[in-house]
Image 1: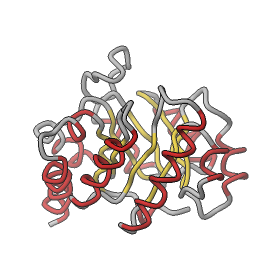
Image 2: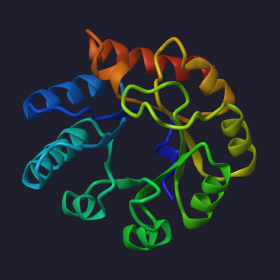
Image 3: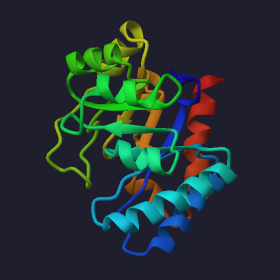
Image 4: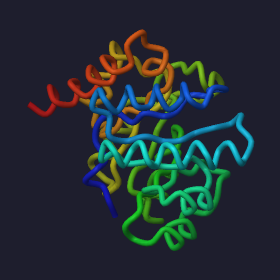
Length: 211
């Protein structure tokens, strides 16, 4: 499993009607040092999703960055993505790991449920995502995931940990201190006036924590 790539800012694509703007925004995040991108798209048609995923694959390769696809093993395989992220209703993790093979990345949403994280780790997940850690504009009804989940996961699970939901530069540091390896961010990154500078600021949080 590829856990060595799993630390830092985890950029999750926002819903964008304008595909060119989406690519420009992701390129700006990559220019700021982000090296992990998830293509998440709840609005586009399937042909649009294929075209956007292919373009993101080319873009992330230019930056030596990792591309994951949200909820879609077939699309991930089609564009030769580096892995997938699955929610609780998006497929069996054991089956997904078998399809992906040992070298691709498998991520799993575990919400605020540590037992789900244990099961995901046993199934071969490279990282487990807890959230919403803060009130989220993307998923306002999400259950609250507390920092003790990261502390416990760091002590008990081999999988990396990902925090998601309502994360900003100001509220992110306690999550890293608690053990979050990844900060999954949509709004605070892609709504920033300078996406490149915001991505770089997130990466600095991890550098400062490491030092």
